[in-house]
Length: 154
Image (cartoon, rainbow, N blue to C red; front, side, top):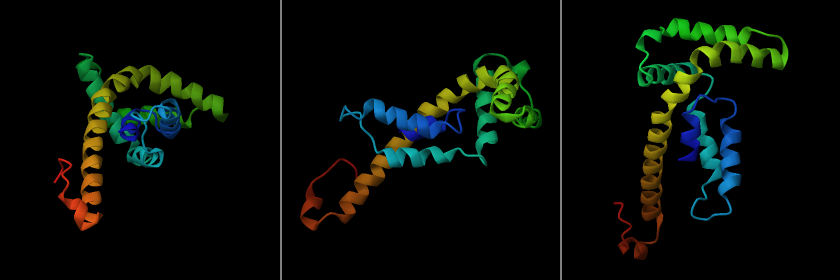
């Protein structure tokens, strides 16, 4: 759940540290604890290959949620802003400055708003799917005498 939540935010590059920080924050509370390695792996749903199409979906959703359909740009224009941001500036600070000036200023709010239904929705669906998978796997691989106990998932 935590890995998919962070995966479905426009934060590629810092999603894994965010999962780790979340794990550090909740590891002392057993009811909130989660598998760190699995959560880190789920963040790989968004990566350098899937980033721009998913971010564009966040952007479109955000523009619609904000009631600004006239601000909507096509995919080619969206990608052009990202390409100019990633190629602009020299050094780390130059790249950060170029990114903030172009991407965050032009597309930041719509992407931040638009990612929310996907972050919460994918986190919930992924949690349900993973839980069903783990329960089925445990039942399948458990000794025959334990199969009579029902977990509610069959």
